[in-house]
Amino acid sequence: MFEARSKRSDPTRGVVEREAFDSAATFVDQYTVDDYFVDRAIDLAWLGVGRTHPNPLVGALVVKDGRILGVGYHQRYGEEHAETIALDRAGEAAKGATLYVTLEPCTHQGNTPPCVDHVLQSGVSRVVISTLDPDHRVNGRGVQILRKHGVEVDLGRRAERALLLNMGCFKRVMGLGMTVTLKMAATLDGRIASRAGSRDDITGEEARRFVHRLRAAHDGILVGINTVLVDSPRLDCRLLDSVEPPPAVVLDTHLKFPLASSWLDGNRTVVLITGPDAGHQKAKDLEEAGAHVVRCRTEGDRVELGDAIRSLLDRGMNSLLVEGGGELFSSFVDAGEWDGLFMFFSPALFGPDGVGLSDRRVDRARVGAVHAGISMISGDMMMSFVNGKTRRLLLDRLL
Image (cartoon, rainbow, N blue to C red):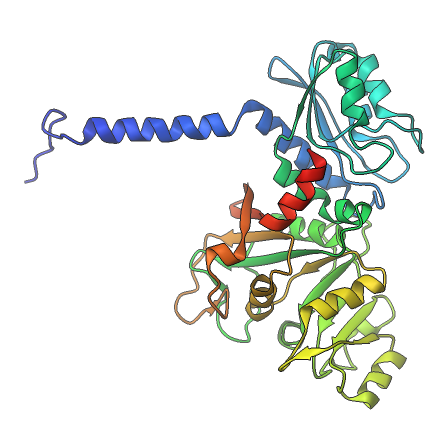
């Protein structure tokens, strides 16, 4: 029989308890009540995806004494802004409350009146903002006006998550080139398929719904030709209401894309990125079937990613969601050609026969990822990251 050790006989007990307490206290210090409400505002903002372009996605909450009095998000281009909706729902109770908003309130007359005026009229005493608005008509003016009128302003809460929310919009407005977002789903043991050539639904429907929001937030969805040939993915936004999917972009060095693909039925824009010497007759046939064939330089047996990105940008595509397999994912990470990263993990194990997440080793420093957030979506875990270089470039101008 084993005898339980007494508290007095365990010399490590007090040390372990103190370390656990210090760790918990550090977490509480780092993640504040303000962070919680800003996260809820960011969650709200995602609901407007696919309908607000060219406007950014924005969410807002009005809170007093820990109680949410009003919520809102920008639902469609030309319609009311998030903070106006939230304040109107709060009504007179907004006086002395805190407004949480993911983007600086606008100061100009557009399709709607300046939001900053509405904020001042509401009587809120404090405004918590994730980032400034890079639009030259705003860009710090909203914060200045609020402070000038005695409203306390807290800027920069959950800034990394706010960057991921509007990365494409921010970089476009600031003239900083293409936004590339990477998305991958894996099991707890880092497998992206149960076996080579298998198509598996790794995450649940709610996580897939968020992926559809990611798709709708970008100008194009990119996959490799192997993913097309093996998985026949739809790459649509069917889990969202009345949101059309963006163009499908395929990296296809040797132009293996099938002429019989359902993507060529006239209801989908398809862009094929291929090498300079890929079959010219096949290219002609594909173009006659409705595809757009773009020739780029190659490196060995692969299309040069930098040239592909520049070619898409020249054709008016400002943001790209990369959903390819492990090889494509690794290529973008290794080349540093990414701005945001969303990783989904399912509580499942595929074991040793499963296909690994990456086909090469890339050390932590080279990846350069800055943690932005972690969320649970109906049992699946989502981790998000921002490229450190992109983060510095944007936040230097947005905080």
